[in-house]
Amino acid sequence: MNNELILFYPSFERGGVEKILQNLIENNNSFKINLISTKNALKVIDQKKFKFNFFEVKKKFIIPFFPERFSTAINAMIILFNIVNQKKKKFVIHSMQSNVAAIIIGIIKNQKVIIRNSENAIFSILHAENRLFAFITTLLKICFYNFADGIVTNSVGSGKSLKYFVINRKKIKPIYNPYLKSKNNKKHLKKNIIINIGRLRKQKDHSTLIKAFQIFSKTNKKYKLLILGKGNLENKLKQLSIDLKINDKVIFKGWKQNTSFYLKNSKLFVFSSKYEGLGNVLIDAINYNIPCISTNCPSGPSEILLNGKGGYLVKSGSPQILAQKMSFAIQNYSLSLKKNAYAKRKLNRFLISNQVKKYYDYLNSFYKN
Image (cartoon, rainbow, N blue to C red; front, side, top):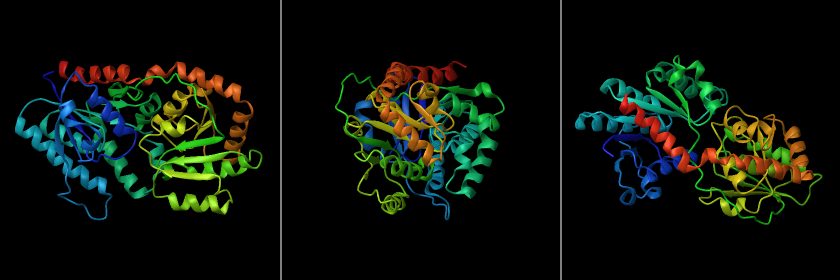
């Protein structure tokens, strides 16, 4: 294990990507790992147990009027430059966030840089919360992504979305997330709960879900909607449930480290996103035998649900259509369970043991080349 890998993840936050980073480090037997990230990473990944070098990103430089992540990327970029400059050896640099910053250092120091694209590149721009910063980010991607030596995408769809950014599409390598530890074979008693898990942000479109649930509730009065997640739209979404007079049935639980407790007893999982790269929470729901409805947003969800054979796909942004499908899924629950069982048979695509090997074989190939 002499080859050195630098994992570049400037801002360690709660979410799906952090879980993938954790799984890569905790199941590594291929590289000597150097992690560049904020100190929150050490709260999740045991440095002593998994033996990796850690370089903390601190707030030394702040860019006024820009999102904090821009400043964090600059600070991490300086650390990356110093590591490469001082050790004076060849690395493989795998960037899982702030990819442009890593690519720039790779160009300057002649190092191999493999980036990870975890979203649909087109729709993440169209539905951005801040259009100005989205425009800046898009220009940077167009200018620099072609200088990456390789690009890992977490779904086939997210890879296809890069066709407007990358000239040489042979650089793009779809590898599903190393996410699932094992399949769950236990059965659990299902309650009249519809569940959603996701950040309360524009991308996840909870407003459409809440409006759909209000329509659904008219004929399904015993059901409750459980929403797990935090975000800048929390107060607006709570007010929406009050305005629709269903606040007694919509339960906001906040962010939860362990979601399995809530998934085990839920009857239906509804995913309302405008766009996704993959959608790890759908994998969890399928694994806990919960039939799934997802918006047919570009990229991952349709792949996880096998283009509708493993769950239900609906048009995004339409409360009426979503409510109709929710009612259909409940009224035809045996069919819904059959769809879920079919999707579950295909979950090996997301097992940590399978996907970490694919990941590291791909990264190792850049040493061989």
